[in-house]
Length: 619
Figure 1: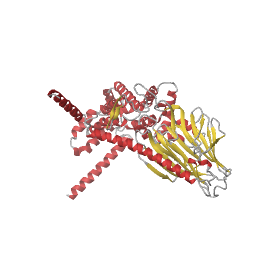
Figure 2: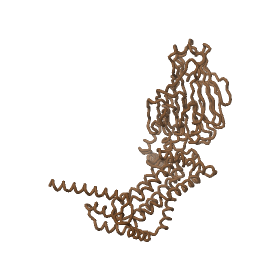
Figure 3: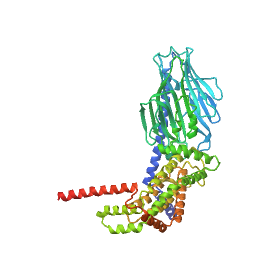
Figure 4: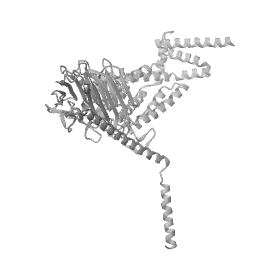
């Protein structure tokens, strides 16, 4: 090897070593890679542990069913399936456990545009346990026989060697998401003790991720339940929780944001232990649910145990109609699965927002146009209150020259009370109430808050596109990247950005309306008004684009309305009118609100004087 060749190989080696060193991952990159590998290993370990637990349970159940058991033959078999369906839903019933192993909704799609599957055999299980004299029945590992099957009904029969049997009857109701489920014992009297009056129910399900955004869907995914003669309750959406429920329950629901699996009992559920655990992001699941509870059972077979399932959308009117199909006389209040806000706001949503939304939707327009028209209609309805609030602010602005004189007269901080008293006296003389704009604003607030609760729960927006947003029920991510940035994530929602920008503009207009002079409190409020839209961006970036779009449109309409009202208002003319009102006003006459404010100021002045006198006396 000559000298030139040796030098060439040396240089090439140096370049390779240097390039490798330059491209060596940073400590942060190595940490992220290690975290990802650990997450994958953790998920694989969880799946292996779950499989092992299931296998151990099956092995344990098989060992307990020996050759002397009257269910020995039923403990062995091959899994087979029976399909029930109507126009809305398709259910698959497995002979293993005699349970519904799959629920498919025909009118909804998953994120891959395939018919939506709420759960299948690997996600859910239902195990009925009944105590016998010598052995117990655990249906989860038993093989039933399908008898009397039709398109919408089937009986799954668990046969005993003594000729008796346990029947699970399933009947899918026409044009509905409701399923009647009945358990009945025949010829089993000698198997059970006469003291047996209940059965145990072990119901489990891993709630699938159905929507685009994991974080947003997590906020609306919860194990929900309804106590008898009480309103619904739920376990935490953001933390793992296990709770023993002392109340008797009408139903238990394994709820996703837009879909639910609800289990109802005619004779109620008792001694319920409910558990909800958060699944890892990227696993394809949201929560791991479990419900262990007891209910009525008649071993003689004279009385059946009746249940109902609801496998369907969280659509308010669909759930409301499903209440009419209940096997119980009491209203099951299934519509509570659609959370419409606090009591007053809920009433607004139930009787106004939903009906307005349905009416506009019936025109066949896109959901974006529906939200646009809703916003305009709502703004029009609150316009009188908006106008009254604007005029109140305009009156106070017209008195600004007089307010400036009072501020100049009392520049010292210790004269703040006197300045306030003189300012209030000025307002009283001209018949202006500083609280005049507050009541109209309070009237508007519940209406706008109603939309905040309605939009994220409106399943009609699911997978509906508008402009650049592919799904109004999830964030729009036209601008996105692979790296996760703290507080922002991996995308910028354009509707959220527009909402934040227009909020700043809207707040600037509002602060100008209320600018009545130098006021430290007003200055601090201005800063808060500008900081809030920035906070909104970080909060709403993961929210439904339909909600950000609604607030964006609402801001635009508000800005336009304010501009028009300014053009319609002459503050000099308004001041002249106030001067005329002052001359016509009877001396000493004060409005009720102003009288209360003056009385409050006098009381403050009295307290301040007493405090000053005590301080002087102590000296």
